[in-house]
Amino acid sequence: MVAIDTIFGWFFNGLDSVDDSSAISTALLALHSAEKYPIQNNAKRGAELAAELEQQIDFLWDMERLGLTMEKDDDETEAKLERFVEETIEKRPDGNYTVSLPFRENVGSLGDNEKLARSCLSHFLKSYRENQKLIIAVDNDIKDCIASGFAEPAPQRTEGQPAHYLPIMAVAKKSSISKPELPKIRVVKNAAARSRDEASLNDVLHCGPSLLPEILKVLIFFRSHKAIVSDIQEAFLQFQINPKHRTLLRFFWPIGIGENPNAPVREFWGRSLEFGLVCSPFLHCAGLRYHLDSEIRNRPEDADGLQEVRNSFYMDDIFSGASDVLEGKHRVETLSQVFANGKFPLMKWATNSATRGTFMRNQFPEAQVTFQDSNFKMLGILWDQPQDKIGVFVDNALTQLRVEPPTKMSVLRGLSHIFDPLGVVVPISINFKILLQTLWSERRDWTEELSGENLQAFQLFRDQLEQAGSIRVDRLVSSHQGVVRRELHVFSDASLLSYGAVVYLKKFMEDRRARVTFMMAKARVKPLKGCWNIHRLELRS
Image (cartoon, rainbow, N blue to C red; front, side, top):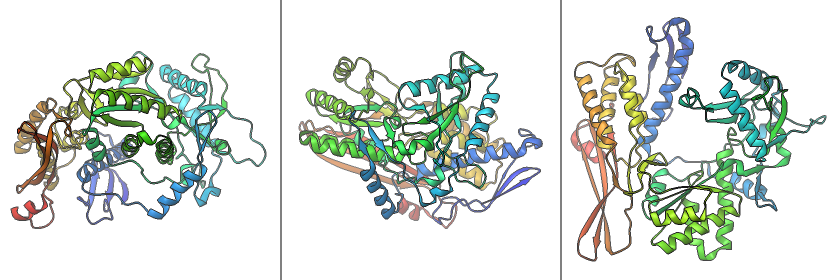
């Protein structure tokens, strides 16, 4: 892919992927809008738009492949890195785990980054000089981090000691910045920052394989029991970093600047796993697996339930379940004890049962417990706890689709805000994909206003999506009580525009009645390339 800066904006020339199976190959993508983006700012605006387009298109194709393809990792490298964690992880006397950073062979090219870190800090403070709320929020966050033991003042460097400095970044939602109260922020150390001719910290670290299960498998497990869901508080930070490696996690901050604008800049280093490290997700998941494996060996009576937890946890989200009240209470107590043994505090709990929810509140008075929320967000999907049904959040998508005038960009932005891995609203969302494909084949510009049949279709589909927020399906699909046998029924079909399939679970009960539950659905637009008739499309479905 080659980027060319022209008077009209940035032009990107090349293929979007070297994989011939990719759904789209882009020969030429011109990003410009003389009205919306002035020519003097075309480079910046074009780059921002290109990044947004890439992110949104990647999201769409990731959703398209979900459940259909599996990413393949280098088995040898994966095994080597997992052995590295097993050989270097240590459990401290206080129960915390210490992990080591997995360095590449090029670690010698790592610079100290001190000048860059100081320069970035100076620029950050100047940029937000007028936004004192943000400065105070960052200062408070770093103070809390130090008070919690996640960072500490760094000792002075000794001669010849390796060191690396990470620039400070603050991540905040735009909506929270505009509010009168202090914004909710997350301080991130930029481990990708590099000085000229020197490697960044992330450049010399192994990323590690993804140890997360497929989200579809997690959601299916979530639907197979009366649910118990929990969340590890500040999960990454619960892992301490090998003391020998902390010198590479140094950073600068004028502690106390929230009260004193002239506070001197001081030097600190991180003691815990940082969010900005490329290896953090891998080390977290590998460390959590290591801990759970140890607990499984020590608790043979709970081995089956803990093995389910090991196979289904999704980063800091923990999933379990039970068939009755007594088993549910036991699972809750077991989870609390198991994770406390590794110093992983479970401070959020959720369930569909009022009985279990009340028990959780009594057991963990300081934790946040929800069991009556009709719009609980669970792995991005909607969980109506009182009704024990699931659905899809569509408000953010509708916000994008209501922006006037409607354009091809509006359709893409709306689609990229529909997260529906189970396909609950796929009969509606597929229409937007068909419309986007139509606009693409007609070579419509991203900012060209929709008109004629395209506008009518857009308005119809938007009206349908307005109603999609009320669509709910049963969460629990695998109750064992009174079930004689189960059958999976799969239906597939195709048109000349799209093809798809839907899966239902049919349960035959002891009272001779049958109950049918929606499992999932998938739909795709017809490929633009190739000669497709209805018979070939039906085979693809």
